[in-house]
Amino acid sequence: MATKFKPLGDRVLIEPAPAEQTTASGIIIPDSAKEKPLKGTVVAVGDGKKDEPITVKKGDEVLYGQYAGTEIKMDGNTYLIMRESDIYGIF
Image 1 (cartoon, one colour):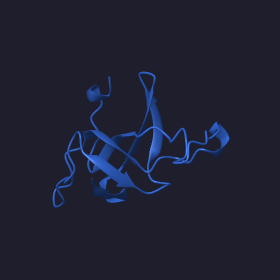
Image 2 (tube, helix red, strand yellow):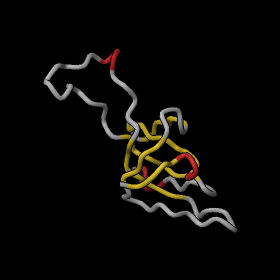
Image 3 (cartoon, one colour):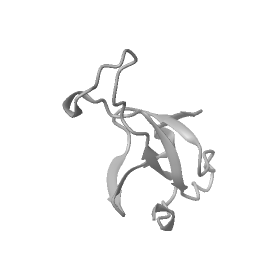
Image 4 (cartoon, one colour):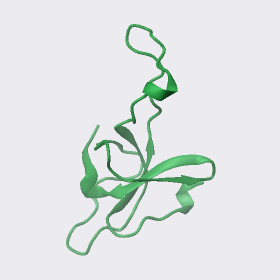
């Protein structure tokens, strides 16, 4: 379970949203053509820095950069860990 993991400092653990399986018109997208999702759900947050508190919280749906974060696997799931500054905004 990812909740046992506690990021340090200003880092955030995110569960990426699943990649789109079909286009808006119903065409099935093959695995080789799927784009990396740019949004996900915050699973765990660090305590922040002394002069910069964390503004996102567990459960927030966020938008982040295409190359942001490091992919890690825990308990059979894939997560991204990144600095809060790599997050563009909250939905």
